[in-house]
Amino acid sequence: MEKNTTISRLKSGFKSSFWVANIMELFERLAYYGQATILSIFLRDHLKFSEIETGQLSSIFGGLIYLLPVFAGSLADKYGFRKAFSFAFLVLAVGYFLIGSTGMAIFSGFYSNFSLYWILIVILIFTAIGGSFIKPSVLGTVALSTTSETKSLGYAIYYWLVNMGAAIGPLLAFLVRDSFGIEFVYLVSAVSCGLMFITTRFLFKEPAEKSKEEVQELKQVMLNLVKVLANFRFIIFLLIFGLYWVLFWQFFIIIPFFISDFISPDAPIELILSVGAWTIILLQIPVNRLTKNIPTQQAILIGFVFAMISWLLWYFFLPLTPGREGISIFLIVLGIFLFSVGEQTQAPRFYEYVSVLAPKGQEALFQGYAFLPIAIAWGFGGTLGGWLYETFVKQTNQPRMVFLILFLIGLAATIFMYLYSIYIKRSKKS
Image (cartoon, rainbow, N blue to C red; front, side, top):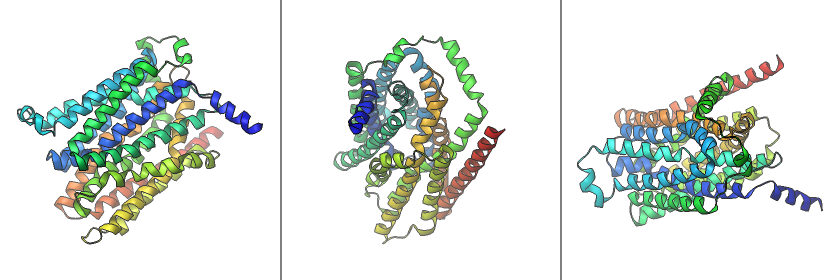
């Protein structure tokens, strides 16, 4: 009887908009990570950009797609999540198609008349504008379509589905790249987002709590932005977290370069990078239940330590000589697995923490700020990764220095987060 009551409570704790929004997020992540796993190789090996140019283009796209939610979240709060989803998926579908078209033979005559670097900058900015509306709208929907009893589980389910998309997307990307060509991966991403545009128009309903809220004037929304930025402790927390994400995004910049150059250009890069997502799919819910009583700061610190260990493992043990490809793949997979164990310990708790801070009616706004550290990491980390690889691998032939530098960044992040947790504890006592 008690078990049935618990199941019934869980069912009633999730509104229909929760499930529709999370399924759409699944397909959006499928599209995003499908192309993200091959973006650096697509830009360097297919479009013939240098490592630094590849890093710069990746920084522009990744930085904006996670920075713009700061503003997109406020607009989603003002105009509604349904309109935000519709705009986002339509722009993403067009944008992904345009990115892929730069590498398609059928469009080569058109693009040959312009600077491909600047064309891609325009296309990537356009695509990022659309993508920036997804996260705050999904997370805002989760916040409004769950109860206090189911909110923590709701964010765990959200993060689990995000990683399901991050696992399936690279698998499809590998199959498409192997069968049709790397540029057609973007066509799959475009189709996925196009289908979600249709889903939004026919199936998604604005959360009841949202539809009853008084719509704020844009002036008030901008004042709220200033108030959030004035929250010194919150901003410091996000900046420290940015160092962690610098390490994470190197999986999509530096690791594909290492696999292509030191193992094989034909190695299944997409499948190797999807190990992290599969790890989280299998372990996220159990880990969430096992670590629910761990304080938020401690859980985040655990994630930082695991991230640091991954790069240290590669610095000491990753073979960088021909003939040991099997060992290299195993160690890369092991490092990604360790990183993911730490990630799934801290990530859902991070989102929950930000949700608790959000004032009523500003859920999407504050969730937009939750992606500020990711924006910092992409905006800085893409260019950093390209520069590190070109400097220490191509110019000075010191590839292990790349791993050492990234380990030191992880060490700094861990120390800063530890000091931050001490500061928070003391401030609560005073």
